Image: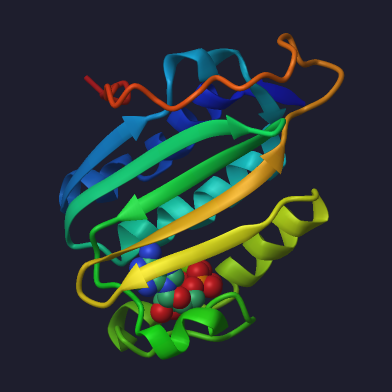
Length: 175
Ligand code: ATP
Ligand code: MG
């Protein structure tokens, strides 16, 4: 089932609403307005975003999580950036391996299996995309992945929507 990317994002964010509000986390939606029209496979996209946003929330006590997206060469590129605890440089290339945890936050990692990113990478690669991470210890982490646009149901031809305007749109808040 193909659903527009903004709806998928809003749905995944709602799943973490309670934790986000409980911590001092500011969520910034930098997905350009035009992305409302971009469709993606709902299952794969929500699973990937669930894992990445879940990690950002889990490993950030106080700070900002920014979600941005752009279209490049017919692929959608999404980034989940946080200002959390970061990952030690020498562990960075291992975080996608099953059962590997950075060891930097044992009490948080204790609450997981270390499978999330391994599954996420497989999901991304199975669909022809790539995933990458950059991080600075104590400063924050950014995961970036690409995903082909959904075919068939695509309402718009693939075209470059350009850089996002820098304007931020708040996610719909719960009332
Ligand atoms: P699971 O996702 O299976 O519940 P997990 O979150 O520990 O457990 P992964 O999602 O695979 O496992 O992540 C692997 C490790 O990478 C984590 O244990 C953590 O050390 C590190 N990590 C992942 N995302 C972040 C992040 N946003 N900030 C800091 N560290 C992270
Ligand atoms: Mg995880």
